[in-house]
Length: 145
Image: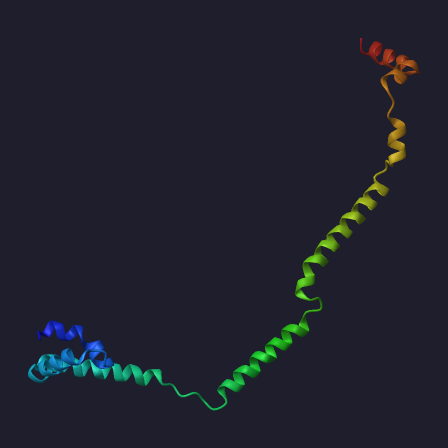
């Protein structure tokens, strides 16, 4: 086995995933090659450091404290909402419709022209010319000359 092939088999050799024939050839090569043996030792040392870092001891009752804090936050969130979250859009729509209705009512009351007055002021052209409108138009037109 060549040194290049040994570096390709490092991972599988450490995990025990090599077939017995390849594993035996790799061990024979490592017993005769100091360079590859150093690489394997360095690789094993690095893997041991990584495994050691993975194991972190949790403090006692850590899980219990985290869960109690999450439950407390959940309770505060449910108590602070006066109106349930799913009802808020419907309430907003109702408030908008109410404000629009109030605006229309107030606007029609204080606009100075009611619906009855505006309908009385609209007259047809025939009525205008039959009544005194002719005299007013003649006066306006004669005054411009």
